[in-house]
Image (tube, rainbow, N blue to C red):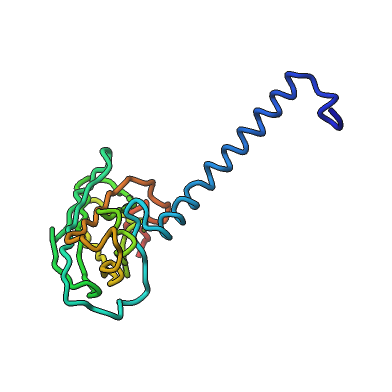
Length: 195
């Protein structure tokens, strides 16, 4: 061996190597989420949908049944449900659905929704224009909100060998608890200034 490694004892070399491996693994763990997210968005893997800024340009005569599903993490206290369980849309036509969330507790609760689409082969053809997923949501005690999702099924689905037999697509959201951001965490204090 040459260089600084030659002067280190076996235990020190082992410790340095272990620390290097730990740092490498931590870096890979940190990078895994954005890399996996990018992979899923490009391929539609795991029911990951596509996004668009505008409605689709082509609308076909074939219809698609869209099912809406809602769930929540075990420790999440909100009531969460789709306002409409199913919807028929023509492929390429923009659909608009609403989910409702209610905070029945006497405390401020924050949450973030994740989503997926099944069957997975349809995920790459399901295009969300506007969605509340991955957006920070804060509900005050007793507050109820309706959250929209606008979408369309891309006509490319009919040419996809794996997805073209799809007649029903299920869009599922799951809410998870997060910590409230300070600016949302405190209710406005009553005005106690003297008149």
